[in-house]
Amino acid sequence: MATHEREITEPVDLCTPDGRRLNPLAKGWSRTPQHRANLQGVWGRTKRWDYWAILAGDLAVAITYGDVEYLGTVAVWWADLRLGTSGGREVVAPLGRGLALPDVPGTDPLRFRSAHLDVDLVDDERGTTLTARWDEPDGTPGHLHARVDLPEGHESVNVVIPWSDRRFQFTSKHQARPAHGWLRLGDEERSFGEAGESATERGGGAPAWGVLDVGRGRWPYATRWNWGGGAGRATDESTVVGLQFGGRWTVGTGFTENGVIVDGRVSKIGAELRWDYDWDHPLRPWRVHHPDGSLDVTLAPVHDRHTRIEALVLGTEVHQVFGTWSGHVTDDDTGRRIEVAAIPGFAEESRSRW
Image 1 (cartoon, rainbow, N blue to C red):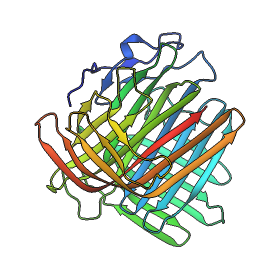
Image 2: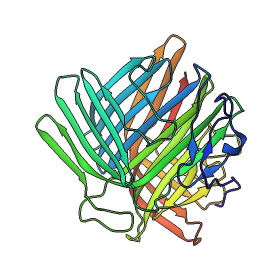
Image 3: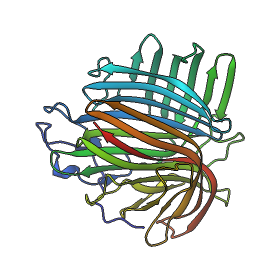
């Protein structure tokens, strides 16, 4: 599964000094975030976001903090995958007022305050603390407190997708980061993960895994993409596997956001993976596989987070399904085939005009 893509090993600016075009030296991928997103001087096409998710068995939680210039969105969402119930709160900020995302992700806290939703995303050297308070639509108070650890040496998939020198995206995708905390809805509280669990040590409680998607770039008006991920222990019970897949939006650029994380180490995949699923029947299996057979996994969905928004010239529709992955992956460092069975994860297709 070795990649042809250039690996970046030191800090680099995403844009030219005027902030208007892609810096040629920024094309490539890295094992830790190296890009400074010095996006400036162009209005209307620039998109910035941090998206966090926690996969905790039958519980899924997500926080979105995004600014697409003409509007901003802050949202918390949760779902009980066993019961099929879900909830949360979203607040839209016209023109992104009150939102600020740093050029170097993780260097400044992300905070938001409103009448019905407060969010704090605070990074330090060892991980990120996520807290949120909100009112459900029926008035029930919600409260999330979560810690997503960043174990020493844990790697991520960081890559620039260059459509052109004026349309490009830097993305930083993190999978298989140990998480722990609790979600409270009214008087009911659910705990997840176990404090102190690491990528190489088995904790005593049910594991939970943090997902981070950082986006900084300038997008075309109409886009479609696939994204999938997940984490858990392989069938050998000693190996932690993280899955990171993308598709559609990267085709023809020479770069992908595909990779497998084995005990914190990334095996980068330069080839486009094949996605087999049914948009009209999203709860049918989603299969992702490599043309050479080195990777072949299938998601068995149990919950569809379906959103559709139409607002004049703007619109989006997304099927994001949650369930469990089974199949096999390959570790580049050792050439070892690793089997996974029913590890938690998700997959999606997004169709957007934005």
